[in-house]
Image 1 (cartoon, rainbow, N blue to C red):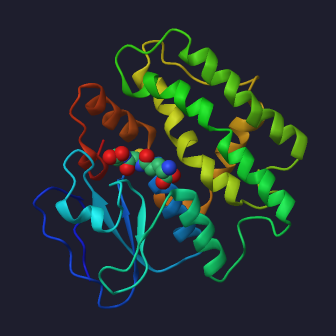
Image 2 (image 1 turned 60 degrees about the horizontal axis):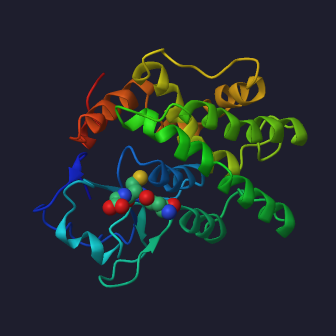
Length: 249
Ligand SMILES: N[C@@H](CCC(=O)N[C@@H](CS)C(=O)NCC(=O)O)C(=O)O
């Protein structure tokens, strides 16, 4: 089955159910939550089709799969009306447990719980930096708040003493937080002062970024920071264009 590489919009007919029974991922190419699901699918080499959704003009049928109209969603079976799964962390954990291959979360329940807490701790950094990335007039304290929230991750790498948050190998924490670290370097293009993270304050974290960027699953899903910046400019202008993901920079 071939699904066109562009975002489905209002008026785009509902794609036929997959006759091959292959799992479907509904996503938006710039959505970091969608990327989480795409990363686990890629890391575990789970066959799937991707259907891109235009979030500013969602297809009428999209709420059949995602009741709140959010991406990501995964459709598991070829039967229409079967519930799809939503919420990136729920999807990631389900895929990790359901499919064979190396488990991305630690087996120990306590470690797993601590890893899930760590994933949640990225939220303050994300809410602080988003106005800088996506709006024209971010608050003055946005970047200091962002930096402070990121200190947690630098300290955690020091505490764990491993190259990845997952240990000696890339794991679920790495995949779940990566999509934002892929977007932060776009600050260099969208911030007037060409902002970059301090190389001393975030020495371990920046090494981690370089290391994780080499991972095969990440290479398959990641977009260049200039492409992110191009999309951010369309958002800042109030006219998000998701299809710039498929254009050359
Ligand atoms: N908690 C959700 C958040 C998903 C989310 O907010 N996705 C955004 C795009 S990045 C979305 O679908 N926005 C469209 C809307 O809210 O209408 C998850 O982890 O999957």
